[in-house]
Amino acid sequence: MSRMRTILIHVALPLAVMLSCSTAKAAEATPQTLLEKYRCTTCHAERETLTGPAFVDVAAHYRGNPRAVQIVADKIRSGAQSGGPWHMPPHPEISKAQAATLARYILATRR
Image 1 (spheres, rainbow, N blue to C red):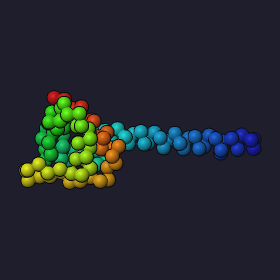
Image 2 (cartoon, rainbow, N blue to C red):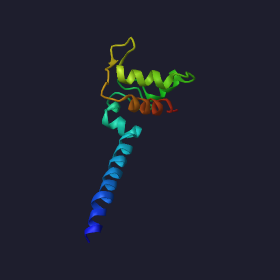
Image 3 (cartoon, helix red, strand yellow):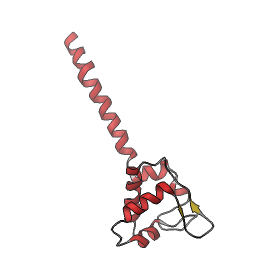
Image 4 (spheres, helix red, strand yellow):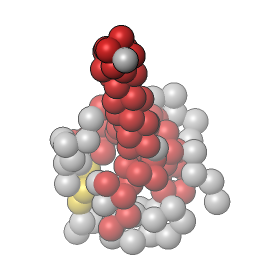
């Protein structure tokens, strides 16, 4: 019984913890989860202009631009001003990897 307990404590338990942590991180990395977490849909929608532009309009604007993911990801993190009365505030709390995930999702949106 003692050997089984040692195996459980030193192998199975750490493995279970590691798997549960990786599952939580994987779930957080989905675009939909990130959109909710950072409240992007307060100002943006997929096909409708709200306070901010619709994702389809952002995708259309950058279509064909090979740097589109980087540009949109940078705007997510640093904010944007586009001549109108509204601007997008910076979101430095969003990691570069998360911003790239969001940018790829936004740029893949089609009408």
